[in-house]
Length: 198
Image (cartoon, rainbow, N blue to C red):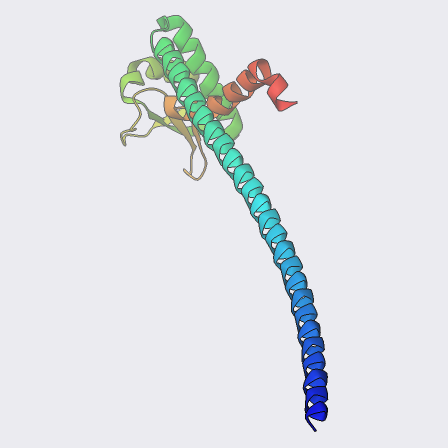
């Protein structure tokens, strides 16, 4: 009986070793699979982090470029404004005859645009005497020009209106500045920044 017990113990021990070996092999296999998955997940996390880093870098570069362009455009606008202000100051200082011809040309353009020989004119505070000379000259040519007594907020230039007041054409310095600004900008860009645009 003791042999049988020894034999049973031996068999149990061999089965136990075999089961233990299988369990160990299974555990190692599972550990290898898990490690493989962990490595794969780690590579995926690193890949995503690299992509996110590149995307963030591109966004920062784009943002910096936009901010730089914005600052450049702001400075460009300031310079154009300064140039226009200087031009307008020079126009104010034009000799009487030359200034009168410019006003007369502008008034004729406004009258032509309105398509009427009866108009109303509102005059800048500092320009009243010079513009009134032109008004009198145009009235001699048969035009009927009424003077609007309401004060114009601008010092120089005029606003011409149709007789009914529904249509007006603004020839104040402020208006001229705003009309000239895009023309000057376009010419400067075409002249000095042509290669940037291409």
